Image (cartoon, rainbow, N blue to C red; front, side, top):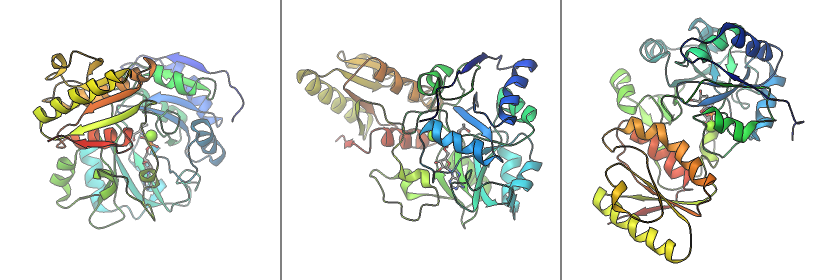
Length: 356
Ligand code: TXA
Ligand code: MG
């Protein structure tokens, strides 16, 4: 447990970041400290990616297993060629199309990247975030910034500074508050060291978009699995850890929409009768039908981006309200739905019920 720190919370304008506040935070990064900052996906917990001691403190503050590597954030494409070797043509094509944005590329690491940052692997994951505050912070720090999501390991990722404060206040140096993040689920992690390229974690850039550029792309079986897969020699060690877990027991009900609603209602009734406080993670289309428990809508089924944006926030709200059981409606897996369902299933510890 790291010593208790005095954490500074800095309110920063997301469209027009105040220079002096960014400079203060960048000075902390340059001195080896820890700064939580917003990206377009979720808040990250940043440290100088090239400073092994600083990166070690990220693992300690988050209580993250040391073999789970950390994404390196850059503000200019040139940095990729310092951090990685043998950068393939298709990486350049993807950077051209999707950067800045929610796509993380796994490449062969160069010598300058500490193995603390890569979790001991010889590959490095790199992305350029699409957020003015994140980019300003990286530029002012004059170094790439290693940053996992700014939550305690295993908890839902933070989409608002309040979530970071809940998890990490007193454990890190600075929290930059620039309001809620835009996308709400993390970046897509794409391994370019194999053939065909493989999606290790679905995220903000969709499978369909990657396929249209790459032609061939695979999704790691663990990323779409309905049960826990034993990942032996994990290329993405993150695949093997429990994630996004609310404190409440969580169930995902999958299937066709009408069958889902019927099953969710039936389960909710059963738990309420047992005296449990039930939270229902519904959608706009079903919100009015339940009439018991604490019902929250993720958004409309026809707008998966609003659902992605709300998901982690709602999981945390249920925890704060002390519900015993969360019953979530499954969603279609096209577009952003693949990332959303991946997070929901993991949040539920693969406690999935098929509605018929
Ligand atoms: O959107 C995001 O990606 C956010 C923001 C802050 O950028 N970051 C984030 O980091 O979600 P984190 O640490 O929570 O998730 C990073 C994932 C993990 O599953 C990790 O195992 C994987 O990326 N990863 C990192 N480096 C890797 C590498 N060299 N090879 C394979 N997987 C890697
Ligand atoms: Mg994370």
